[in-house]
Image (cartoon, rainbow, N blue to C red; front, side):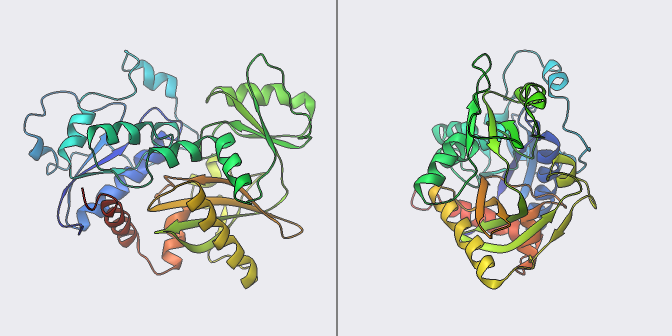
Length: 350
């Protein structure tokens, strides 16, 4: 299917701790889609669009965006946002109606809202087309324990980890210190800490639990950090991340000039090739579609360890996937266009 001029809903925001990243991606993707000739409306998953939407066609041409390109240094206050619209529903008014009126939904969601597969499953039931990976691959990739089991089954090395539930004791025998503590389902390193001793563990567990249960306690692998994007099943150039601090945290990821990012990474050709082929293996094993990004550590002995796969990687000015695409000669607008076109191809024959 060719991506002729269409009505596109860019879905972003939500109640995720990565809300600001999602809003930024939404604003930038919407602008690119307009430059590509499409009629676009951005829509906040949680806030929705209250009021009369009887003239749905007009919504896609009025250019009243709900997104902002700004990202703060810290994750947003989700409790305050939730309190602003009582009722408990994570999906705002008219979201599904507007998405059904679109030719396709460009998913600019991140974290729990969007990457866990729930929105994709709902859209499948409602017959709504959307970009990127389907519900099953999204759910597996977002659940760190499930993803690790897939890695093991496909010969991909990954740090040892245990799931820790509240009231069940730490249960981290065999992991040792230092270790990495993070939420089971989340991204952008929100809620993550490096723990150096037993004394630091309770506070780190409690901090991570703010963002979901169970908490993952993972073996800490020392080494260089790399990311590899995959587009249409093929790996993009490798990027190396040199964070300002112990690890590549939220601030390093989204504030310009904090981390040093080198793309293409300065590596021996054989290691570059191995990272790229491993990224493609993970892409297939996790049943990802269209595009994704894999996170790796290469230790001092040259061993590659996959940390996780991201089904909806950020598309902000400091995000890694657009940098990798640029290194491959793909501009930002071209990247958005490829994501749109390849996502439409998923629905060929319907």
